[in-house]
Amino acid sequence: MIAALPYSKLVEKHILECIQGGIGIRQMIASMQHLQDAPKSLSTMYKIYGSFIEMERAKINGAVGKRVIDQALDGDFKSQELFLRSKGGWSPTQTNIEVEQETDPDLDESAVDTLMSLLGYNENGPEEETTCTCGEEDNCRCS
Image (tube, rainbow, N blue to C red; front, side, top):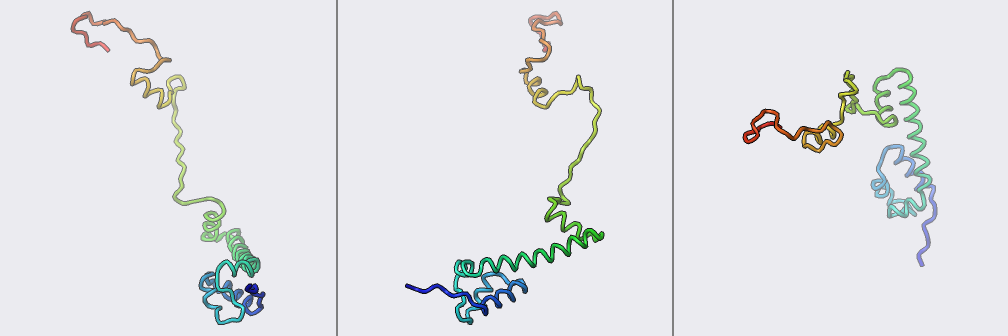
């Protein structure tokens, strides 16, 4: 039976330096292999140091986020835009165009109603005459 790796303060210190330097987790693991009791896999790393890693990342994210929010509230446009994109769901390409159009509610009908009417399936519309009004029964072109 293989004994579990112990928690190492040297590994913890290395992880802290890597997180503060913006190093990715795979590079972090590779760069600490010279240390005694260094984890060799991602799963072992998170099993032993996962809560420490998340705590340090949360501290950094909180500090940067506070700075961005403070700058945004002070009127910095780039910080405002960053905040709105990341936390406000805003996108500069997302545009809602509302056009006010005056229409007679009695004449307003949906696209489906219009299409059905054009196809001759309008059951709510006025009944069409089936007799020819042009007087030429045999050559009638009335619709």
